[in-house]
Length: 475
Image: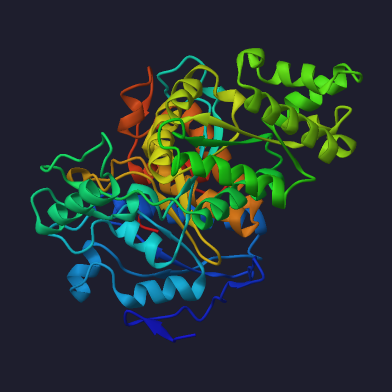
């Protein structure tokens, strides 16, 4: 371990988190790198770190503590080191495995498109994890926001976010379009217009299966009822349709004794209700209108039904499947209306990159918006917890912004470390503070009878509601 990064000495009062054989070993005093963030990140971090320290102190009576270690990215890094993302920052995050960050600006003028995306790609943080849960008292545009309690696992490295694209009118774009039109699409009706920009959308078996594996492991460990594969496979059959296919393959190959697919559950349930049901009758219940299909298709469904019953009825039949984790899938446009009309039917969503970006914000809107939405980017051996909103520079250093996103990301980090007691205190304190209507301006303007408080004051009230003596902003 290096003794310093970016010229700052590593804390001597902390110990390193290690990672081996898929598990993190967390000491009682872990060193946690933090990036305070740009714009409003400065105010948010000051409030959040006080909440974190107070929760740990209250939960463990001094037996545990975080050794915070500042690393740099964004505007602060540019001012100090002349680069948006110093190598030492990445090295420190690698060294200590778990870190947390505030919002970062998107550099102007090229180079790095997004610092957040750069960190994900450099460290191969392939899962963007977004828990979306309602806290009592938060203003919401829907009638029953309490029905929302979904965790979204969004693939982080592929899809259109791979950034493989060419600008309209450039020689590279022209060359690619000519190749596609004259070689790959030759003789067909499809042609790409010559004045197009072109992007590539890669979705791989590797990227899909490791994302779905992480989502299923989380669902099993946390007692969640289902994992839903969200895709647009009805149109994009060989990318998003493949995501669905490979997701089901992973589930049934690696977690066979613990999961049941939705389609399997229909077959098993038909057999449970009528032990003497024929393969043909079962197939017709699974595929209504099967009598009008081709003989080849009918035989394929008969084969499917027979295979399911032969393979898993002994272990999953007679109602046993009802205790298994349900793995199903939904078309992306359908899930958007379903998370509004019946979100309580969904538990964990596993999605390709772009779908996950959209759906996580759409879900967050129902429980108070991005100002209170936590998130993390997780890979094999590394995790960065982060604010899910932007830097809001016009509010920087005014002590007015909602710190809820970083605070709840910290609670999420503590659960990741196995420090559930500290996480519970943070969530309890935040919820009670909101119920008392002591909120920052974004909530105050939407809540009748609310008291508008500063960022620092909001943090202090959370601490007070954890039963810990209130600290001042100067602390």
